Image 1: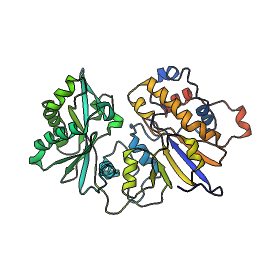
Image 2 (image 1 turned 90 degrees about the vertical axis):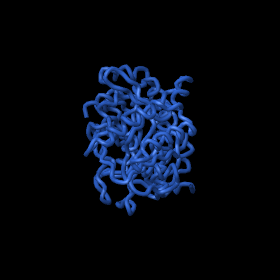
Image 3 (image 1 turned 45 degrees about the horizontal axis):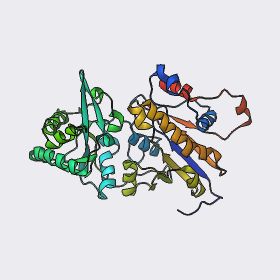
Image 4 (image 1 turned 120 degrees about the vertical axis):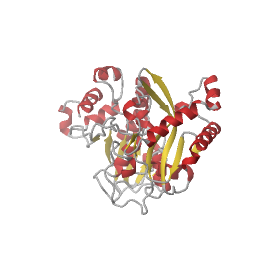
Length: 375
């Protein structure tokens, strides 16, 4: 990337999923007690409008990113993103991440069939996925082969380009509604179970996968060494790529993110995407003018899994690596600060300091947690 042109304008939208939790209202004071986040408080002090939220449905990290790219509703034939709507009607999540993981275009209908661990509890179960499984590529291939043998008569094909991201090819549109594991992780799965729009096809396959994987020798070996068994899969993200790329004007000139969904947008040529820099200070010094979307998702997983200590540590890291450099930079930039609420998706727009701000009542993180809970 060439050095920035001082004559150009720079606008940065910092998307921080999980920044405001969610946390139970009675815990708001406790989760922020003792946090020393001067830069965050300074940014919050430059906001004045009420916190905006777009509904009570849980927002996935993937959905927050795509909603930021299409904030005004339908563009190029797409509806505004809504996690409560079937993925195939909005964004083909599986097809997008498939492009990132394989470097190929998905042909026809495809959905994610991710490996998960379901931990039974009284009347329900809790889901664990992704890095928490610590699943090797070899283990993933063996488990996938077992499922492929079971589903072969139905003409379903399971591909495993990554240990924790699996893809199922189907011959027709899956009539399925489901939330991503980034929403369901460590939560009771009851309200998140895949919903069939027609016959109970996918709920049945969900149960079948559990029975098949329960007998897998790989899982017996994993349990002996204390690892979580891969005892189920999670269907979500069904769709297929449009014949033509999504239209409409781009909201951003470049996205900075390590998310698979972002890398998929780059692989498809739909967006210009770069890896997230580890620290904002050197990044700002060489940043080109334009509109930049930066997704820092360190706090999201901790908020979803209700890990208060991990969430506090993530906020400290975000404070040091991003918020302090943004406040200290001498460059003239505009900053939008999107909280990335779960539930809801809220944003806070940061103004330049004004003389009257010194008499304004400061906006605190604890207060915003309560504000977000009411929105």
